[in-house]
Length: 402
Image 1 (cartoon, rainbow, N blue to C red):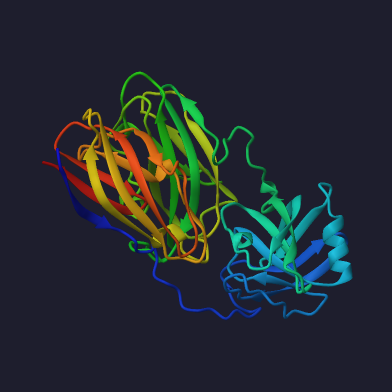
Image 2: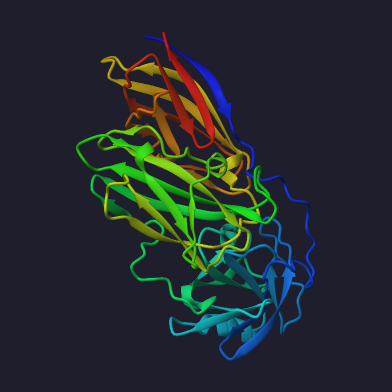
């Protein structure tokens, strides 16, 4: 049986328009609290904002100052000019050390030492904005390797409120009856289509796996967002439509895990330092999953996965007619390595019935280096009906069975 492939949607646009180039000075970002002072090991260093491109970071600050990479407000990236004192200090740090950043609004953030490593001077991994933290880098010591110190954010440091211990954390699965839900990322989005003045969208990406014996109806999920003032927000269709995954809908068969995105319309000054994302599989279920999600701004650059180019060249059934095999390729047009996980790929009927991934070549996750292409094949269980929709990240294809 042959299949025809029709490109349905190619959604490689960014959530927000590309911002103009910024050349920061210490007086910029008056509406956003920016780091002003770094304090560690009884030393205090004023912070100078700088722009860094593709890891090419040459220090310009005075020896008693430090450089903060402008726009890194999730994982604060700070460079220390190379000196014997700075080198000895970073090499001597241990789990007993606390590091403090004083912000322009008078608040102080506390970080706890988490580890030390040597990283090549051209590496861009140190700029990742995937979790709250602090990265300290020794700059300009004329070697191919840089000393890098990582520190974890102490959640109660922003406003003196601790995150309740009863809350689950990001990437922690929570089982509720026949559903296992895992929040994988969350972020505040501004300057996106549909955002009103004084408002923002808060996006939460999560995966629900059906671990029960019966199908789950995602349309029955009860999801809400709660701020630190106990104000609650319902799911916004306009906000959810901007996510990398669909809003909850359709049937989830036993053994299937499906990624979703829920978006919320919140005030731009929503109360933090963390928000609480609540989930129930249906309104009648008494228990709920409550997950602490950070109140942080958008990353300074778009998610590199929005720049991937996906093509499908073949789709056919195996000899036994029990599996659908899909062959294609993905190109990475960015300057950083990108991974594609099983949760980024789905095959479903137009009604939302999902097929299970039975295998892939190469094995998932797919890792695509900067400027590289990767050929792949995917094996899915066969779906009922005469059409299906394949989604890889933000690109969708319609498969018609003839």
